[in-house]
Image 1 (tube, rainbow, N blue to C red):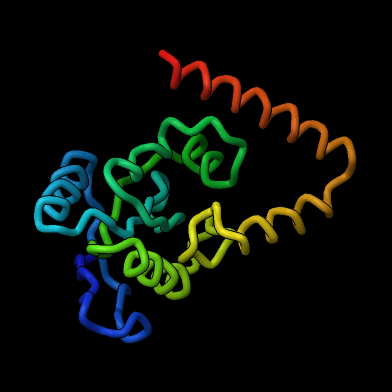
Image 2 (image 1 turned 90 degrees about the vertical axis):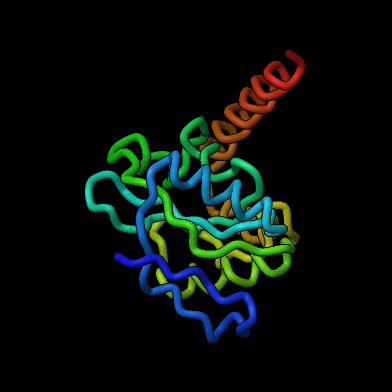
Length: 167
């Protein structure tokens, strides 16, 4: 597949992300570094399944965010895919000067590719009000036992992250 970086001058819905190249970790790190040096610290990336090389997750990042998924300990569909099938590589869809531009491009990529691990339509980050509302709705559908297990796991994760950050 051929990589076609989004043209940042076009309106987001006019951009085409149908073709892309899967990059290895070193290539992705170099591309992110070059974009940052060129004044584009934000980017839209994808993760490809190890078994089929298909795009299964799209996100917006800064710095080395794209590589953090490999270290995540969460019980999410994305992490389950990584653990079960491995990672074929990374896709750099576009680079941007601002978070707002990157979020708009992320929404476009998710809408065009419909990656299986993307629950939200993207474009706002998980700390947004709409993401919190969505998470609350999902949580309301769970049984009390499921909610309790999730809360325990969340508290353990928070404690572990606090330990790591205090080192």
